[in-house]
Image (cartoon, rainbow, N blue to C red; front, side, top):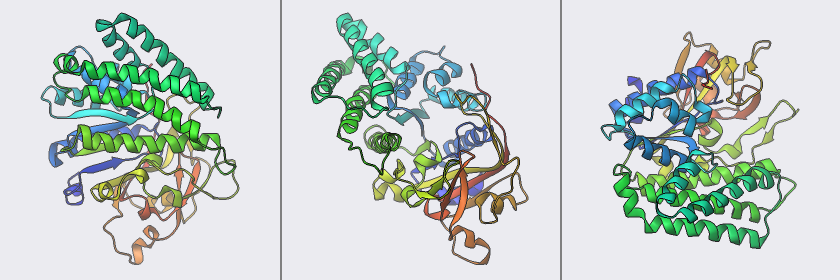
Length: 395
């Protein structure tokens, strides 16, 4: 990994993408990368494409509970990477946390269950009635988000106001008891702020769904993704400035969230006959320009193999029965005589043998969605792995 030192020595943020979550070799490579970035280049925070509140709650609990192991952390917080390949990284994070040397968390706004359990149990210590009320608020939020909002239906203004007021009541309670949180979780000085931010995300998300106008050029699914990526960008910026202002941060997420200038990319999935421009700004695109100047984006791509997403009903077989176009990233990088390789794009000048970096080519997203792009406009570097296999998930 020493080749990364001159490239990343002045960077404060490193983004690690992936063309799919369900690839064993991607996670294995990132474990090595993160250890190197921490031990040799001084990066001291890892933020995953997981919920901001789940990450804070799991981090807080693991800081005081020596019996909370990596499998519990994976199942509570990192469901897409709850696999054998990511476990060594979580073991490493736990080991480093004991010396308060490496922090971890999330930046997503989509919620699961651990945060809800963690916060309701904590509130119950001081106010059993409010804890019960909080449970009702959260269950209603999950039902609304998972059903009504994804289907494109809007809350009434009155319902929206009631949800906001309910969450603000819980936020006020946390703020009032922030000193108690500091005493209970002494290694998590910003825990109260992150819990409050998580609950604020709940009603801000609903407000944005409410305000989103139905337009023919934007489907309900696209509107959902636009809101999500914008809020993930806001969360990441907030964490960088309010929680980890003096830290060097590694960000782990899908390529479509971490790459730059995504709306310049044209995509064609298996149901389309022509390329169409992306309508969703990535999380990274939503960050300010001065943040981007301190960043380096690595995209992960592969040539062929098997992808197994966490909750997919079938595995995706990639490129077992076809040949790539000569004008594709996969064809070009498959010419390299190594099983895996890293290619810097950011610091190159155009010449005979690297013209492909400066001209439109295609690359596979999720193993089947074809993107057409000038690749150095969107990534600073590429990790390419020729043959991949599926992640090995825990039950």
